Image 1 (cartoon, one colour):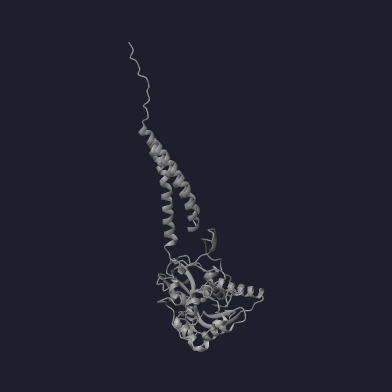
Image 2 (cartoon, helix red, strand yellow):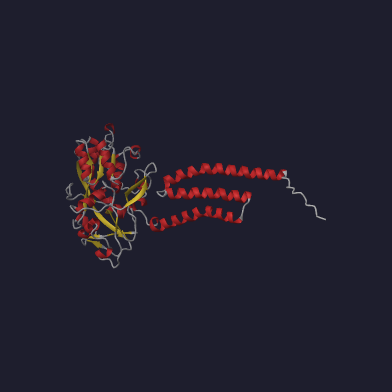
Length: 411
């Protein structure tokens, strides 16, 4: 006699179980909505915060998909093997992004960029405790407020000089206004001079392209020399090389000399020669030093433009052990005060104030006050003051060398 088979009766879903399923589904829906909102927001942040935004965006997208899959399978169940797959999808972008960040830090970011180290607030006029030289302005140089205050700009390295002058000659309300007092790169300040946005700038002589732009606009620069500085070359503080000849510098920046061993180093390492952007004062000075010797293309790096677009631009100096850079003595020694770089002697002469003054250092740069239109009375008072004994003392007390016999502006 056969045993009867019990009917296949499915267990009924209780009210409690239905509520749990509903809550799980609701949670997944809310999570999905949240991730859909977070995905573009973080994507926008990545686009503006790193040149590697595409890589991190892919990692972010895979992470979100993996997170959603892991949450679903742990809420609703599934094979153990599938759980491992989804966990792998979740963890893979985290591991990749972390490894990539560590690699970029080790190879690039741990080496400091020189221009990011300066605290410009310490040179702001009228700011309590600033580092500006205090100067008394003789009565004959006092500006007439009724004639308006000249709008000034200048190279970064010269800001401590003319900011100190402004602190002595301008009212505090005008000195703190960027419309009247700014500091920018030489490419920017010459452009502002041509457009009439600035009345007077403090800079090196214009580059060939800047001079051609003025000629094309029917404008002639008026240049008045007022101080001198050394054009210097520097390396990592641990680099054993202490001196380069002018011919070696030309060889390096023309691409003929490529290894530190070729210039006396006890090791064989490729030289990493940094340059500045076209139109900057130091790049213009390098071009004059090189003369007819062609300069090799500069190192390039990806950086972000104002709207997040990636621009392939001249790489800023990064203090690799094999790097070579150039700047001006005051900027690199007084403003940076960076013990991680070492200034080189050139042709056996160190770039000291005394060697600038006596003319023995081979690459001395003359600094000018430059205007592009007829100078107003107030502008002329500023120029006259900077050339006066009080103005030249300001130059010297700041750390520059007062004007002696200036180099011609076209050399």
